[in-house]
Image 1 (spheres, rainbow over the protein chains, first blue to last red):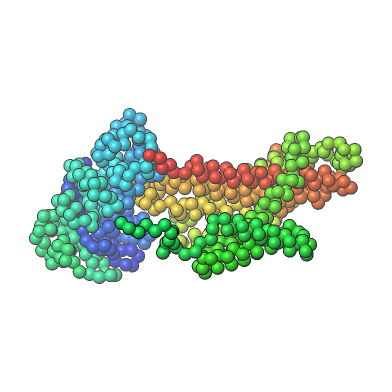
Image 2: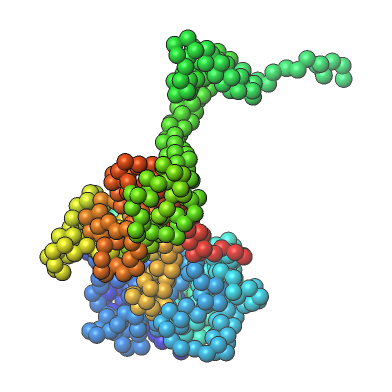
Length: 259
Length: 369
C-alpha cells in the first residue's frame, strides 16, 4: 500500500476566481508532508483537490494534473468515487456519523458501499483499524455505543480509524488537531508517526511546531494579498524549511515575523 | 476589636428597593375584588370581570413597582404583564374549543355502539322515537372513522414519496438551478391553495380521466395529497438542510456514492424530523371537509374500498349531521352524533401530534456514552 503523488501545473478555480495558482509538488510514498501557511492561502483547497473533494463545492474546478503513481486523477473517465476510496481524508472537525455506533462508524466505508463482509472479518477489521488509530483500548468495551458520545480527541481518532478501515493509499488530514487539546494532539501526532510506515500522509496545519514534529517535508503556501491566488512558495525538507529557508517570506513566516 | 459589628442591618449598597415576594398575589387579590365590585355596579359578567382584573392588576403592579423599585423594574413588570396577557389570550380559544367539544361530545362518544356502528338504515323514525319515547340513540360513526383513516392513509402513501423525493432533489441536487427555484416557488404557491380548490381539481381530474360523477375515496385521497405534498416538501427540506455538510463530506471521503450517502447517511440523520413533519402533515389534512365533500360524497354505510363507491369521513359526517339532520323535526340526536364525531376527530389529531413527538424522540441520534 501507499502511492506517491505528483502534481503538475495545478490551478484551482472557484467559478472564475483563481484560488490556487501553478502548484508543482512531488510527494513521496510512505512519508509525512506538511502544508503550512497563513489562513486563506489555499492550502486546504489544494489538499482537497488531491482527492477531488473540492468538487463537492459548486463551481470548483481545476486545471493541470495530479498523478497518483502516474495515473492522472483528472483524466477523462476517472470516477471521483474510485479516487476517494484510494485517497482518504480526515477533516478539521471530528465528524463521526451520529446515527451509527462506534463499530458501525469504523465499518462505514464498507457498509455504506454495501460490500458483503462476514461478522468475523468485520470484527477483525474494526479491531485492526481502531488499534491503528490508537483507540482500541479506550473503546473496546463500548463498540455498540454511539460515536458521538466520545470526547473530541477520541472522535477524531475514530474518524482516522474510519479512514484507514477502507485501506487507502494516501491519507489527507485537514488541520486534524485544531479542535483538540494538547494531550489529544499528542496522541494524533504519535499516530501520524505510526501511519507513515504504511501510508502516504499529507497534513495541513497552522501549528508550525506540529509541522516540525511530524513531517519529513514541508510546503509553504502564501498569498500576495486578498483576492490574489495562493501560491506554493517553497517546498523542501522540513529541517531546511525551518532552519535555513531559501525564500525570505518562508523565513519570516516560520520565525513569526510575518506581515 | 471594639465596635466593628453593628447590630443594625445595613442595606447593601448593591441593592435598591424591592417588592416583597407576595406583592403580585396581593395585587391580584385586590384587582379581583375591586373589579368584581365595579362589575356589580354596572352589571356582572365573567368576561368583563377578567378583562377589568387584568387591567387593574397591570396598573396596580406597575404603579407599585415604579414607586418602590424605580422605572426600570416597573417597565420589566409591564412587559411581563403584556407577555403573560397575550399568552392567556392565545390560550383562551384553544381551551374554549376543547371544553365545548368535550362537554357536548362526551354523551355521543359514550353512547353504546357509537364507535362500532354505521348510519346504515338509521332513519328519522329512530331519532323521533329517541326524542319522544326516550329510546337510546342508534347509529354511529364507524363508517366515517374507517373512511377518514383509509382516505388519509392513501393520501399519505401518495404524498410522502413525492414530497420526500422532491425535498431530496431540492436540497441535494437542485444547486439553486432554475428548475429547483421554480419548484420551490410552486410549492410555496401550493401551500396557499384553498382546500376546496384542491378538491375541485381532484374531482375534475377524475371526471375527465375516469368518467363523470366519479366520487370515491381515492379521489378524496388525491385531493388531500395536493394539500399534503407542499407541507411534506417544506418540512423535509428544512430537515435535510440542517444535516451538517461535514457528514456528507465524511461519506464522500470514504468513497461512498452520492445516492448511497443520501440514503444511508443524510436521511437516517434527518429521519426523526422528517417523520414528525409527515405526521403533522397528516394531522393537518385529516380534518379537511371541503375537498372530501366534492370528491367522496356522503355515505351512510361502511365502505372499505377506496376505489369504488362513496365514502364517509368524520368531517363530512359532522357537516351532514348538522346541516341535514337524520330527522329534520328532531335534530338533537344528530347534533349529539356530530359533537361526538368532532371529539373523536380532535382526539385523532392529538394522538397524531403525540405520535409525532414519540417518533422524533425514537429516531433522534443517540448521544449515550
